[in-house]
Image (tube, rainbow, N blue to C red; front, side, top):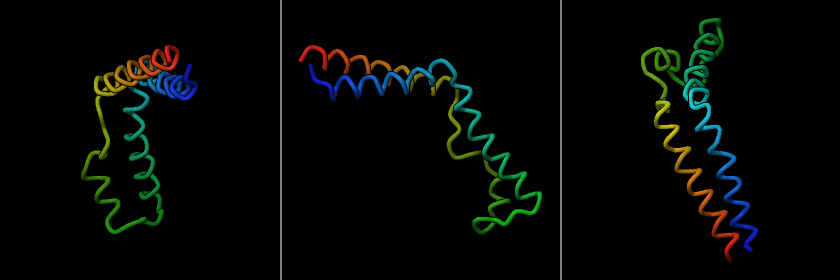
Length: 91
């Protein structure tokens, strides 16, 4: 038994399950952050960098994957975690 492989596998599985079960929470996170920052700027907050407000209003968030993409990444993480756990138990 290899504790490091088992631990890494458990961590992968624990991180992958929320991505499979609730991918919309991760998708909406980037939009919520963008909207929150836009509201702060509209209420008079200082811009952190040159033309931050214009960028937020003009472009979509840089990281805005679909639910299907997040689910696929979660399934890959789940598979890798299960393989890691299995390898750790057989050594």
